[in-house]
Length: 268
Length: 249
Image: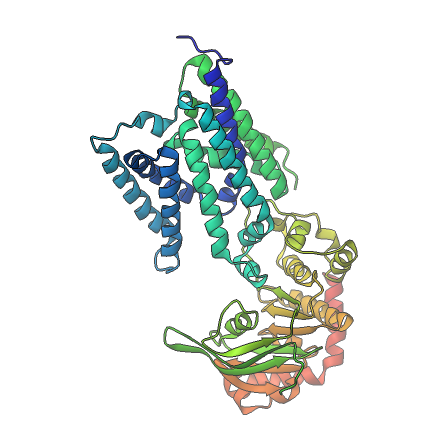
């Protein structure tokens, strides 16, 4: 069957993709600034377990993902307090335990799950109800971040300076974990588990070379994300290729272009 | 050393970590217009004492009493400048601060950061970075400025430049200063009192007196004490020398 860009389910896919871009552009900047890409990746890994549990309990994939990812994030922040092991070691342990448990859970006979759709994303599965849910999630996450914007920024620059001004860095880490969880849950259908981190990092990394203030970086990375989603889905429909990878390839192309021109016009 | 209206005071505070006493029964207080310098060897608990006073570490015993609504400006030794975030000097100085245009301009001119205000944080030199940190700590018009080894990473002329700047801000603003510093010979002129800390308070007093204190001599050695003595005698000529070096920067 020939798909057209104006088909209702393609439009829904684009709307879902734009929702993802709106929030991942913002959260992705913090991921890039604070070097949290492995953390984002690990939370994404744990979403398979979340999807499995969500179906097992009959509460749906999204609720399951949010629930499990939150537990994962808080468990990590708690373990991190001891400082005996480095963050990447802890994440290496947790992410793979979560992945292993996830594979075990979805191997139960009762569970009918489209593993392909979870790993690689499938915009054709996005329903109108999903889109409403997504925009509510995006709205919540954006509000959370904007209300704490300057505190988050200061914690990112220097934790001691933030503490001296009465900010609790742990609270800020909880906040970032929560919004990361929302991003992962939203991105699962559109981008797929394996490529979620790309959507977080590539637009922000692309923007980095072009801007000189945090706010503008957020705006630029969001716009780059939206552009990648629309062009990516368009190409995927035209060429009949999966949408998630197509979006990632478009944003990666922008990344290399921005670095090429960034070097060319670099001011000293 | 007890007065009723201290800005901030520590009463018999102790901190124990891993069964080791970091701070033992410390009593200090900072009054209006004080300039107090804490010296001591590495691991003496200097930074811990600052953290307790600023109430982001709770001492195991003892208490901290702060004047209500005391405005503190804090300048850390350094910050990890992250290249991953684009951040200009102006952005950094003002983030999460309430201020008006007049006090911003005043701070920028006091700390001589006018020329670098639009630069990215990541391209600053060591001395410029310390002035930017100082500017940030001054922006909310603090009554008390707390500095943790503010010139640690600078070369000698940078240190002199920085301490002269601090001295002039201290005099102009009439604020109180609490500073951890190893560069006692350079802050001799500005500092009014010195606390010598080695987990407990070894000695306390005016800089001229402290260098003759047997505890100070046993901690830093006789040579150090002699060097200090030289600095005190030639305060005025030192100042002229400093200014010459400053102009050269």
